Amino acid sequence: MIRITSACLAMLLMDAVLDGANAQSVGSTYTSTAPKTCRQVGKPSELDGSTTRICPGKDGLMVLIAEDDLREIVSVGRNRKEAAGEPAAKLWFAPFNSSETTVEWRAAGTKPFAIIQRWHIADSSDPDKQGRPNTKAMLVVTRLPPGPVCHVDYVDAIANPNANELARKAADDFARGFACGKDEVKIIGTGGRAVELATMR
Image (cartoon, rainbow, N blue to C red):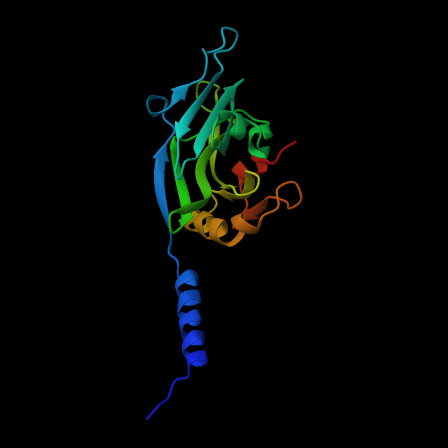
């Protein structure tokens, strides 16, 4: 007959709790930043048509999309002011660019810790038949609160056929421990023209 002491039982229960926490499922949900799903802040600029909008996210977070001079920034916060104060709101890619309207939220249980978004970066060295620059696609992984909101990883979507999987793994592995302003953004997978353009300074 096996006898289990109260101390052993307490340890077994603690192990079960820890195993449950470690096994907390990580998965993705999605929101949209399409203008029809967002609230426009103010009026478009009469000078260049630049706009700012706030879009609903997950777990009480909002997504800030600001476009100026054919370049966008994307940030996240509990409200517009908070999102506008984050490091992500101060990062502009040098070439013309835009983000797609689907936002992928990576979450442990119900708590999101990163977003993944596809961006298109204009390549002036590769014009189309009308002379306009073709764009190159990449995925941007951005860490979420608690702590600052900033870019963590870039994945070239053309150079990496499995770019979505790479971005999700990068978000899961790096976003929560990333130190904004101290750690450097990582290039995940094979580098390509989109990442090269995005990191131009």
